[in-house]
Length: 265
Length: 337
Ligand SMILES: Nc1ncnc2c1ncn2[C@@H]1O[C@H](COP(=O)(O)OP(=O)(O)O)[C@@H](O)[C@H]1O
Ligand SMILES: [Mg+2]
Image 1 (cartoon, rainbow over the protein chains, first blue to last red):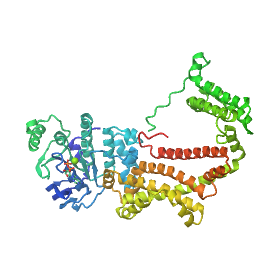
Image 2: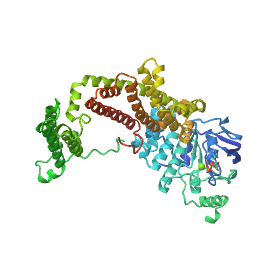
Image 3: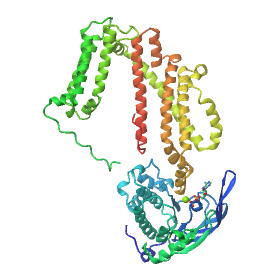
Image 4: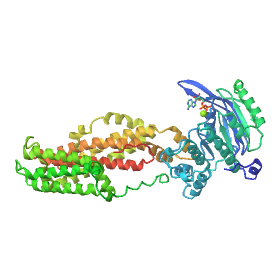
């Protein structure tokens, strides 16, 4: 897949939505005790922007994504997509989870078709499924079942399943976390290329600082649980980015410091 | 899947001559099978019967014909395609089974080592199949009709109930206690009451078979639906799925492997109910045939009916497993029946 330059990407119409997270706090009840997970999170994401969330494990990143997806409602605060309050799941905001969670009883094609089928528009839109499978390079596996796929292929199917809905906001929860490093690097560039081509707003959770820096316009660093925003760092480098870029290396050091890991650098 | 399947390696080219090594190898077992069946045939014809059986001659000739078929099949297996391979694979079984019937023949009809009439010889069972065929066939059809009706009703109701209580806590609240109270009761315990309260013994038996089928199907469907990972629902919901989609396209397919375990268990327990119901209430079917044969001390008829019954039950289970294999191709490592 060819990675386009940032200049080229601008010529495509941005379809991304604006995402506003305003004063969001959330907690879970566990055995009668209240576990605070998010603490007054405020974040405004511009249409078509690529934002990465970094934070210690268990701090509440996935919870925040579930709120964005509309799978849960925040205890305090509100989330808005293009000024409209998010009150439930909607195919304009699709999530790719860390586990591909493909439906094992469906073939690759049928898994990708899931969203269109659920919305009742599959009959007239079958070509969209074919196109997006082509896009992620799995045309020859369209009739395979999930147990016949490798981890990277399964994650690509999960990505295709999200993209077929033409989402305005793509929510990614450590989607490359379980892949080997080579597949991971390849899929990072594919992701950037897709984002540039389609123009959706992207919210990516990752535990890999380098991944965040290579992919995102902005990197948000979260604190320990309950998660607060510790830093909001604009990366401001053109794509394609190089892992050896000294500017990125400087940011990396700063972020690791924020995460309390400066000694390891 | 078809994209990966490598075409079967073509069978080895047919050989021109049979060598001595072949006789002890691939052909040896087939040859042995043929000889055993020949021995069976000759044992029927050579010694006189100790009793009065009309089919001894036909049985002996039949066995020799089988021996000839095995011999022919063994040496032309390479030209017979699938059938030839199947024969080669089953040749050891043909040896064992041939030896068994020979022993059975000699031990009963020829030297009466086993007490008559409790151990009837093979020819008397053959006699049942030829001379009592209409009655036996009637019984087979009656059993299939009763079993199929009750099983389909029970499986359908069990499936719907299982999905409902797995999905809706409200329905579960009402159905679960009833299920716990009534389910574990063996369906046969209802027998006396059922035959009183239902208008016909046929409807009573259908109810009992449905009950025996319904309980395991309900419980396993329920546990299948309840154990579906919430991650599947999350994915479907973010993609725009409505509740009906979640039930029909997520919960049910995900629960299907459990449902088939329930269907399998239900089949087993409904067979038991079928036979008992036929023996006690319904005046038709293989259970009734068994009962009737016992009344006349017709032991050969009992064995004949038992053999048919076992073929039918085994056939039903094979059919169920085939259906499952077809519906659950997506599962890896399913057990072959
Ligand atoms: N449904 C839930 N019920 C109770 N506790 C939860 C639930 N989901 C997450 N948590 C807790 O909230 C905290 C944050 O979880 P999560 O958002 O998954 O963290 P992460 O940043 O690693 O993605 C964890 O301590 C987790 O145990
Ligand atoms: Mg997480």
